[in-house]
Image 1 (cartoon, protein in one colour):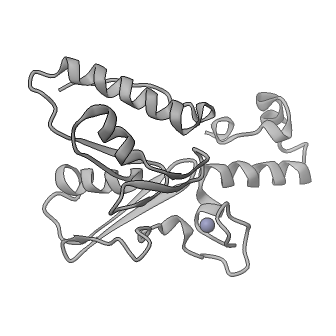
Image 2: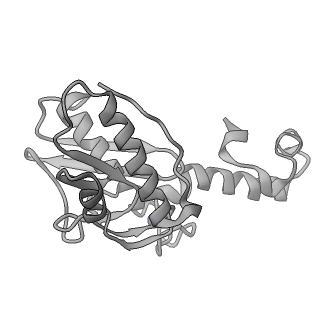
Length: 197
Ligand SMILES: [Zn+2]
């Protein structure tokens, strides 16, 4: 119906990012044939379902940001806020690979590993609305340190940041074998997942 694409600039702080979202949505609304009735938004973080407050957004640096109420105030339409992977889960379930099924697990592999679960025709939410975070399943007891408080998570081995970290460690042990990657990245500590793909 309409499409706008903007980078997220967390360094602007929550207020700056929210202002960018409002500008983006307003532009999109102007392109619509019919007036927009509501807004659904997926955000990288832990969202309190009842209030639409982003309790904790690691990569955004957010804590207790009232995203739903700020957007409703500015846009004058109902807003639903959910976690970004949860939003993608809904998308796959309603319109994508999981259409028509009652039980579904999705994994989104990127910098981290996000996950979501539909069971018996219901999205599994859990008491803190974070159920289905399969990237933080322990696969190695007392294993590698994760970005979450635990050790040995799936994400700590197979997430983008973890693969880069493991490559850096391996190359520190054997710089000769990693010469091409060092050249490509500039230095060992600059080796990111992009250099490895
Ligand atoms: Zn973890």
